[in-house]
Picture 1: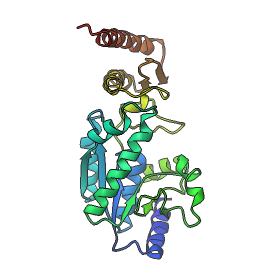
Picture 2 (picture 1 turned 180 degrees about the vertical axis):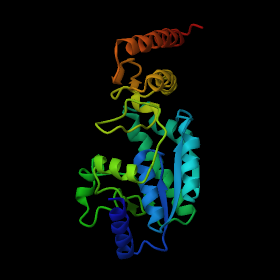
Picture 3 (picture 1 turned 90 degrees about the vertical axis):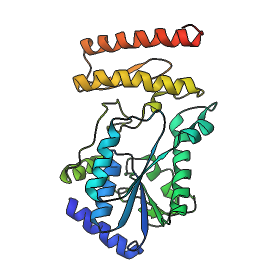
Length: 271
């Protein structure tokens, strides 16, 4: 399946004139973006990776991401978007991911323009909402489009593969990603950053960003210890878990109880 995917990508790249173009891949270090990087590089395309981080990003996966891009022999840029995220998200209604994605796309565009990249690439697959809601408006091949209209073409080498097919391809390519053992989103196990666990309808406040990181970092210790998938929403402190038993939930609730106490004290101005 992997050799077929590479053959199809090479044929597509020749047809669309991608050889000789500079491609900037938005690289999160997850399975999708890692597979996209693997395919683009092994198809002989000129690809570099860019990773956006902020104050509340997970620290643990970054060394593994850098090791992977180094093994692929691609340049890897790290850009901090903390200031832009605060400016565009605080005081607005969640979910925060909507605001964060806009900041990342804007930064990707300007980074690409300033540094001479011709195309921005993403790891979207066929299960992502972009496949229907956005790309149905595009009459051409969904792998390369001008949607969203940011002024530079977007390449999506995985857009015709389902999440399950991405898993198979990644396994065949021997791609291993670092796990924080988050609860993840939707059916596929997609980790991201702790800020996605701020309650969706919440008006975003900076203290919630701090709380989301602290709470989920503590919960991730338990999740990694027992190899279950677990996260906690804030400020509701709702625990979400795949694979938890009563013992694990009891341990998690003890952590949450202490976090609630500290948050209540901080909110009331106590020390």
